[in-house]
Structures are given as structure tokens and as C-alpha cells.
Image (cartoon, rainbow over all chains, first blue to last red):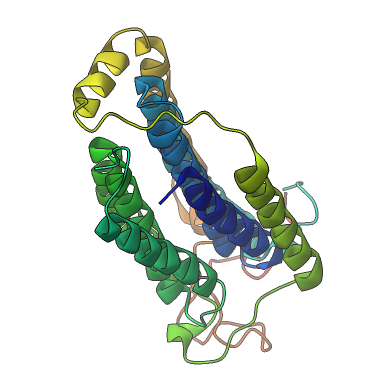
Length: 101
Length: 214
């Protein structure tokens, strides 16, 4: 468990998340991809905090802020999915080709 | 735990957690059921939380474990609501632009891995005797209190925003507010609901108008 291996695993999680977010048609699955990317960001930030920054408390603060961002993203994301479905009966990204209505 | 020389057990545990985190993260987008995808994502998060614990971030790891368990349980409910493939019984492949997505994913992984392998980072490991939780608390309630409070205000704004976005559109919460709240048609090719599901309002042709009303 070195900094290199931790960062490689984090890069793998971010890459998988981007792949899912771009490839999935369902809007909720797209959100899952974004969550997986933030998962990788959390791991990278935690690894740098513990192995490169000598346990600087600001590193922990960064991870806490990233977790808050993740909660905000999920809550607002699902609220938008519900609002879009109410207005358009659409839950696929391909169905959302305009913002009107 | 992560002193100058982490023990062999820590190394082995890290590789197990890392492997499970990556493989379950990959299976999220390869399973047929969106509920199963949610729990695979939960597995990925739990293993990353375990790695954070191995790294010595006691508060961060435990917070991630608890937070993601609750968050993914809520997410599973949404997945049931938006599942296009009942119970994941049918093979499902709901993807578009698969090649672009795969190339972008591999490119990001290659870039990140290159930074990890060839980047020059300081080597200052965490002092195993350090009081990391106390340091975090002092930071949150001390110099970085404004950042912490901003995160709290952002979460309040999120609560208000999500309620506003997902609540009924209608001013009086009457019939018009329920448009779009109907169950999705199981047989979308037919384009109609089974009789009895929708009570037709007198003189209103709202139902089934796919977004062409303002």
C-alpha cells in the first residue's frame, strides 16, 4: 500500500465512473457513474492526505467537503430526475434533447 | 497503522479491498438489475472506506461507511422507481456511444495512473501516534470553520431545492399536479394505460401528451 498503488486504484475508479456516466442511457445510472468518480476522488484525497501530506488536517477537510458534494449531487440529481419525469415522462438521457417545458 | 513500514497484513488487506472496489465498480454497469447495480456501488464505497481506515483516517473511513450505506439504501428505492427492466430478469443493455465512453474511461485511467507512477510526490507518511480525529475537529471548528459552515448551508439549500424540484407543480395540488406521476406503462408499444389505472378527468386531455403541453 504505497501512494502509487492507492492513486492507481483511484484512477481506475474514476475511469470506470466516467465510462459508466458516458455510456449509460438511464439518467439514474449516469448519476451512479458520477458517484463512482467521486469515490475515486475520495480515495485519492485520502491517500495523499495519509502518505504525502503527513496527516495535515486540511486534507481530511477536503475529503469531508467531497463527501458533502457527493450528497448534494445525489439529492439534487434525483430531484431533477423526478421533475423531468413529471414534465416529460422521460428517464433516458437521449430523450432530453431540449430544455423547454 | 500506516507508519514507515506497513505490515504485510495491511498490504494484503489493501489489495483485497482495492480489487473488490474496482471489480464491483465495474460490475455496476454490467449487471442487468439497477438495484443490484446500487448494491455493487455500495460494495465499492465500503471497500474504499476500508482502505481509508487502513490509511489511518478513522473518522473519514467510518463516516464513508455509514453515509454510503444509508445513501445507497435510499438510492435503491429510486432505482426501483426508475427501473426499466422489472427485477432485472431480462438481459439489459441500456448504453449509447459505448466506444467513446470506453476510450474516455481508459484515457482517464491511463492519465491518472501515469501521474501516480511518474508524478513526484512528497513522502510524508502519517504519524501513527497522531490524533487525527481531534485534529479534524479542531480544523473544522477552528481555522476552516467558514468552509465547514458553507458546506452546511449548501446542504440546507440542497434540501430546499430537492423538495421544490420534486414537489407537485400544480398551484393547488389538485388533479393537474399529478400529471406525470402516473406509473410507467409496462407495455409502452401500446401507448395506453390498462383500463382503471388512470381516471379520466372530465374534458381534460392531459394524459399521454408527451411534453407538448407547456
